[in-house]
Length: 421
Image (cartoon, rainbow, N blue to C red):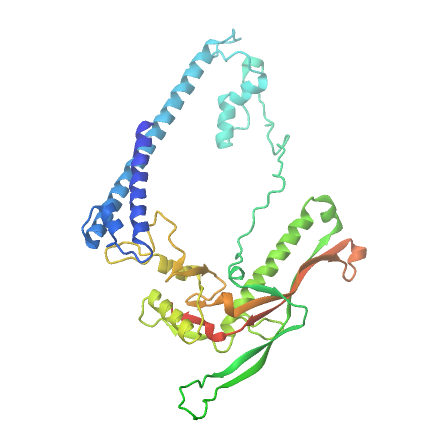
């Protein structure tokens, strides 16, 4: 037992040492930092990387040793259990009473049913399901043909775990958390966009004419759209099963938010759809081309800063595409985004990473979500119960849920797609 614990402690100590070096190197993985050199005992970055590789190999060997000791302990525990069981059976065999007949005595205190269940013919039947009868003259049992089993006898009672529902796999809410929200009492969000902004300010000589600037505003609007869902349910289901209404309410509410989460990215703007960011005219794009993915992302961030005059705060990417980025390694085999023993930073170039599989694989999106897009609620999610058609006379009801929202992208150039990831 102590060898298992010692092996585990050695492995954890090595892993902590590796993690401490990566933390000291920072997101840029600068292994030439003084703290990194101090921790590794190296004189330069190359020596620090060599020491990390050595520690990684050491951690692999220690992990194998730990697993070997665990296996040996499992075998030892199993052997001990077998010996203890054999000792219990040996002691039980001594407690016997006289048995009628030449057969081997059975332990005292067993009922007739227990003797039958423990008998070899019954054990053979339970294993192979082949015998249909046997003879046991010790109690005058002959030709016992009808097996008292669950299919022809008394089936066991089973009870479902109360309140437990294993959820089916579905896409979680992924993008709504980074989009600011507001409220409105109107049927549309109307705002003014500065479409012409020419600053003419210039130096002037005495008595010379002043320079002239030009500004022009254009009215823009985004119509409030409705997203809804419903499900018919019987009166008996609502009355007889506790929690059905709350279960259905939660599922309908989640489904609406999940649909909204998709619309703010992919909505095509054709009524009754919202106009999602990816379909807004004027957003920028950056092709990956032959660039590494991090380089292409940085170029997109630069476009948002320079052309969009905005401050990008998020990079939305499909989980499969983020996987390729997360697994990037140096030529020496060191993971750029951190050791596999750690979660690693969910950031790229200092910008938050949002994994969203509602985004088409192969395309990423960077942008200033905090300042240049907004979701307006005309009516939050409401859940109602009512009747439709002949439901009243059929003992049915309909639970429905819906909301009304408008989505606005104030400055399209504050967003940029990264294609070809």
